[in-house]
Length: 252
Length: 316
Ligand SMILES: Cc1cc2nc3c(=O)[nH]c(=O)nc-3n(C[C@H](O)[C@H](O)[C@H](O)COP(=O)(O)OP(=O)(O)OC[C@H]3O[C@@H](n4cnc5c(N)ncnc54)[C@H](O)[C@@H]3O)c2cc1C
Ligand SMILES: Nc1ncnc2c1ncn2[C@@H]1O[C@H](COP(=O)(O)O)[C@@H](O)[C@H]1O
Image (tube, rainbow over all chains, first blue to last red; front, side):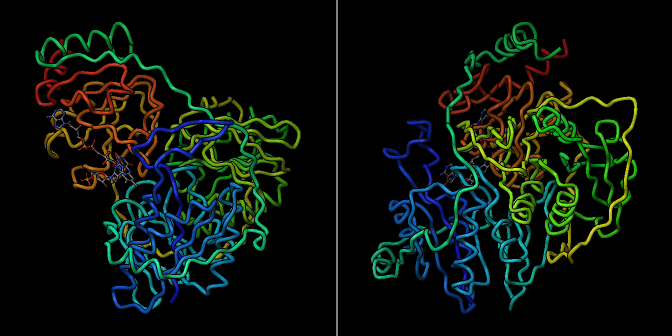
């Protein structure tokens, strides 16, 4: 079988966000593979290592720099990578067109991607791709196992979690808790340099964005930052309760 | 029509639905606001929401007893097509954000996710939503006769019910057979006040020490204040608290009047679920904990001493 893992390159969680020209500027920031997507790469590798005959293909869409994230996926152990190169920002509905077509071309039967994108905060790619392929989907998985073409596992729902079974082909979203992503080792990094990283142009996919991104701003809510020293616990507690009651007026 | 897909829980229309009615009425698209109720044994839900909208469409079917993304998206897309909807509003819940992309693809419509504002002028729709783990507010635009929109909970003012009820119509649906088979559920709904609807949320992190510490400090303070309780991913993963209480990127987003963080460091993934709270209060023994950067009030000190002292003070 072929497993596609879709990955994004995003701002490192520890970095602060900067805005320039009405958009978030990433040029001078540390960029990493989206953590949510790392769980997907790791899970694909684990499925392969569990004895299933599988080829793991990492896919990324974006400017030349996203190749760094693909290189990380290859160094973790993905077999090959596809980079659809574009400077155009695609919303999830447009992006799903690319991913669905690649899934068809590659005759994939399982697509993994992160539950939420750490850049656009979107949840939509997996379901949109599944719909285009007429495949089922399962989101926010926290455990996965594959026997033949039957996928079983656990995933988070609105309230609580559910166990499920699902027949492949399917689209699955991943999240923290599913596994512990491995770090690329030096030998694997060396080996990955020989792996195929194929470039495709966006044109062939006919994927025009459905949304126009007008502006971005950081709305800093000014916080009072009244931080008390708690060494004298009763005194600090009394002062805090007084502030909450009489200044903020948020408690009775 | 403007189609609003009704969210409900425990036999009651959710606050998020009343908020979507306001978003629909203020959207600038001139069309009757139509509520769509999907489920089984939902007469009471339909009757409740009839007091807020111009008409109610009801699909009360055994096949809809359990939410499924393929069922829900098929139903919503069919009704939106038949009713020539100009806007389809879906809740920004986990399930709403899961099935809405399928609706958008079926309708060949754009999807605006988790919006906090929504304004249509002619065919152009402008909306805002948060990006970069809720640190950035982005404005998006699309020109379209029909759009699918998920509405962030806790942002729009809930609509108030009217005295007279709108007419209800039963609808026929062509439903697919669900392919995801749910084989078991971990019911985690607590008897506590719901996180999404509470004015005050008291949350605990690893700093409460243990599951017992959570009860002793966080739940006790929540009880005293009539608040909902929340938790960090770290303690949900540790099994101290159920997942349904988790706040953050992979949990719930809350926006209460007051958020009290007890023994929480303030990782970005946690902040993204609560940083829009009106007043933030933090207790942490580490003065450098990032939670203090977004706190209005806080105490640097030990949870085990401070929370009992606060409880003591509140009871005075
Ligand atoms: C993809 C991804 C998604 C994630 N999603 C979420 C999410 O949805 N929600 C979430 O919460 N996290 C999420 N996380 C995890 C997040 O990064 C943090 O690990 C987590 O929020 C930390 O939880 P914590 O604050 O309870 O623990 P810690 O970071 O360990 O903080 C504990 C704090 O308690 C303080 N403390 C300890 N003892 C005491 C004491 N006696 N008195 C006072 N203070 C004390 C310490 O100073 C410390 O600041 C996610 C991570 C990833 C990678
Ligand atoms: N990039 C990151 N930013 C914030 N938290 C992370 C990141 N990566 C891992 N974590 C989480 O932080 C917590 C502590 O991780 P560690 O310090 O590795 O024990 C765990 O819940 C990790 O999953």
